[in-house]
Image 1 (cartoon, protein in one colour):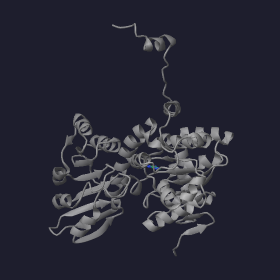
Image 2: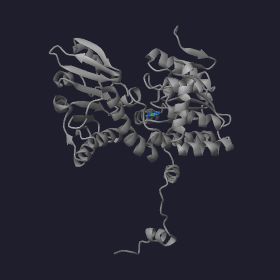
Image 3: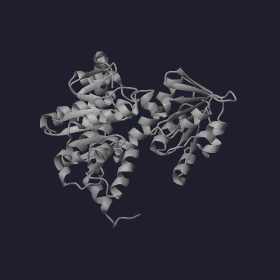
Image 4: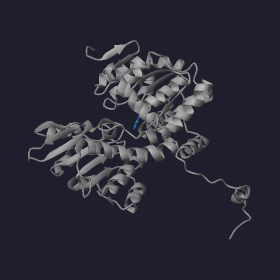
Length: 425
Ligand code: ADE
């Protein structure tokens, strides 16, 4: 790979000269991540991760930098890569490299470079892996099985990754324990809903600057992420249309005041489309065929296969980048369709990802899961493990306290009343 990047012992980033700018972004994130800063102080004193080598593959953002530096302060050696070719914030990667973190990540890499970076981080011979989308775990299992001798366990950040790892465990193919960080209540109920909702609309607006009020805003998939996007688009005055395959999810969308229809019908009326399903081919050729002139299409699911861009490419007569992160495809009848961030995660590629305040809780779960694996991972079986309920309540409790909200406590009499089956009407 011959190119103009900053490389050195243990790193390859876009340009080390961006380090100062990156450090200011990290400082900004730290000031909005009080739970992480609390955990960092406690576990720096305890050195809970001493002797651990953590290989991570997760979006390189200012919030991730806070996680990385907390893990390092708690005693771990770190080697990191980004988990999406377009999500790395180059200035943050530079700041991390300048401060001595082993990191292989830059914005705009191709697939070959993506896996090269993962391979470089694995040279560290990890004891723990930390994933967002499971590409790192898959690489260990499929390409570097010899590394499993020293790996105690791993964590997974996303819905899609956890889903695949559970399938792998069901087949007996998963060879070490993984903690499903995604499934913690303090992760999915906040990050997936409020984080995705705000950051995806942020990405759409940065890439297009269109008015959302009065637009038909089509959300494909009304799970946690899709419902978060719907909530925020609704709040900005858009008419939300949800498409679903699951009856209960569709019903929730209807009772939240949205219209539900098949994508074949939504394709004709939508102004802005966002996919949040974790499924491939949600929007494809026959949908592009009937879309209105000016339709904007983007994705906020983990992988870039939700929109079939190859079919659009084959149908279009021309293509140009009209704005940053916004590609205009012109069809033979003159209609123009706009694809944002090449169909990759619009919130991370066109904006800065979820705000620090929600990543605070998601990464507190990552951090505590690493501490748990270091202490007891050798006793866990090779399956997908849940976050303990106490951890969720602990994290939510610290978060509330740092936000200055008071919490009531049950009295002894009230606790007794809860279990008292002699008390009735
Ligand atoms: N996923 C979504 N938003 C993120 C962020 N800000 N940092 C890391 N991972 C993310």
